[in-house]
Length: 317
Image (tube, rainbow, N blue to C red; front, side, top):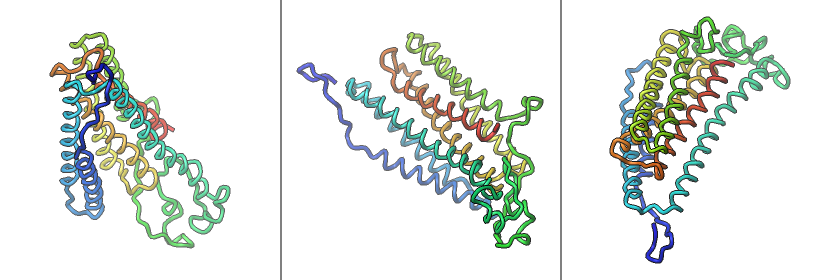
């Protein structure tokens, strides 16, 4: 904000407890996921209560954290310099998220292009193939483990007693003839369309068309939450009809890890956009000062781009 001498000063927010409580909420979510999956693996009546509790803690913290930042901006505490720092901070945050997903895509590339062929005996993997799974041939999607491919532990020179459940089907591209019944295609269309409507909302706001801005933002939210619902339907179909689980070898593991983390980011982005929508209903934002929404739209476009890569490397190729 401007000082009494007309110079721009830098507003430094006071110390905040929100990062501490957000960390607790995220930790509870991780513990909740781990214990729930372990209970399911052991055929115990597991409960997602810890996971849900952690999610509610994170949601409450973010809601209040956003509220503090909003009040500071509305009270004129944010100088142009601080607003620029917000933009730069958001850009670095999205870059860190790009690197996060790059590690998963890199790991998938390593498995498919290097580890798999090595286990088949190619290159430096000749002795690995001979000693562990003699005669194993790698192909993708890997619907069975090398142990299953060679007939189980009895046919291994060095026994590996791991137990895996091979899926009956996979989520790969079924071909043009069956595309209309392929759920990932409709999910992709939904999220891409939501990215377009989000951009329409942004342009409407910059043109000071508040009615159109709120309408297109509302449409974006509906499409986003519909995507989350259909992702849940896809998981249910994978588990119950295809036998595809986290125990289904490397394909099942990478499928649920990549789509699961992406789904979490979509949920986070949808929650952020929901906050932006509630702010819009209260009359917040104008064509010259709306970085809260603009930053949220950047993040939404980011999860859309990630989905494009996800569909290409997990579902199609």
